[in-house]
Length: 563
Ligand code: NOJ
Image (tube, rainbow, N blue to C red; front, side, top):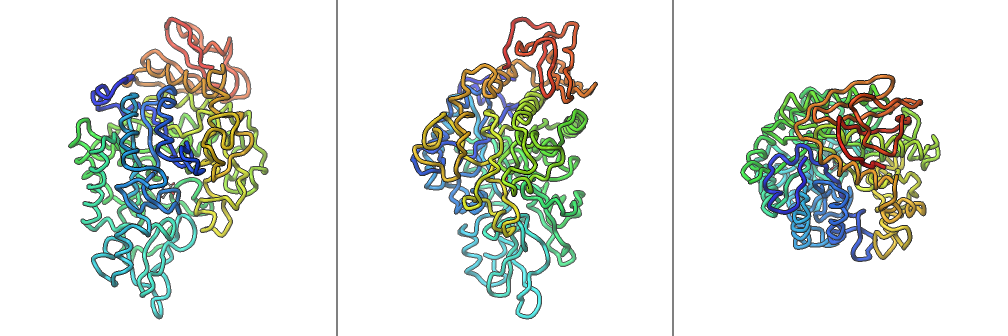
């Protein structure tokens, strides 16, 4: 794994994304530089030294575009600007500049499935008549029944309720997410060209890569025969556990259709016209063998592997997910990706502290009371899982705050909830805000160093004890563990192959570059392998404790402290 120190070096490695550690920044919850209670881009910029010292390779910015924030910024008004409350294009350029100077790459989030209903094209569509070119950029259909008062079919939104909204004149428009997020019509050439222009806009500003939102949703079969009941396939927080599983074989009318790959092949041509080529990663909630198609080098290059978001704490479950991911990404010439947390799911330190199979939406509805969360166990396992994934070949996508071991804030009062899931489900689900609470940087202060005012999404009093200030430089803290692990990871080789095996509830990853990682999923200590393998975690003595990962090196020299 290469260490970059300057902008020149950044340009020198076109394959950087293959083993990058990417840190997801959710801008509104990262750092507030203005005292508004909401994070902004200047705040992100001020933390670039922190990200450099943490040792990540890239930052991925969740949407910062103009938005009314109906869906946390995934409702975009204008794809080629910055929301004035977050900064300006000049601030964005400064982030790219400073990040590159610090040896970090920048990935932006592209939201091509839907715009917001305030996008100029959607306003034009509403102001136009049925079957007009303006409406052809979105998905408008005549309603059913007398006066077209019924929606065209019974498709459901992933956020709850009908996926159709009446336009007022007998036409209805499709929104797979919130009402304020109308779906684009990707069979319209104008839509395709518009997104190519947007990708060029950001690539020309120096952006190194793109995270593609709902990549599996763009191509749709809207013929009348496709009017089957749609169910959820999307972020864990949004999925209805009662919903039947969709077929992921190209036959579903709304998701993962074969035609979607034409779109990404065209995007790849654009990415490859840059030096170095721009990278991309698909968010595609599809069956693993179908996910690999999005990750082909002729398309996006990578796709998020989400199996570990749903895997129980078991060596076999992790082994199965890892082996499948490694095999599928190798089969298409991609590199693997590893994700344990993001802004759509319950944070992994909470997931692992709950009984296996816990109903997460119900747990959130109980404000985190039932079932009870074992915070210490959850954190221990979360740290072990992170170390495990960081020892694997491929890229790791980290979510802001996981380096502090933050658990989910499960007891947010419903009055402060911002996620549309809360309203769209009529208060049956709280949604994803508990993973989006602003980060604690200091142990004290009105918002624990997030900004000079209280955060709009309130932080709990216990956040201060988990702050960066409380953990920086402290032996054994989660932050120290991340810093040490990321520094050590730089001496692992990008092209290493791995052997993965389970014995006595421990998962062994043996890398061809001489590193080994052992994770003890069991309840009793495991012996450190003997022979030429030497422990590099001086924090662990003769045994590997339960819920712990250690990294070992074959015949290495020098001691490393992993915390
Ligand atoms: C996936 C994003 O990660 C999520 O936050 C968003 O709500 C949906 N896509 C819709 O854009």
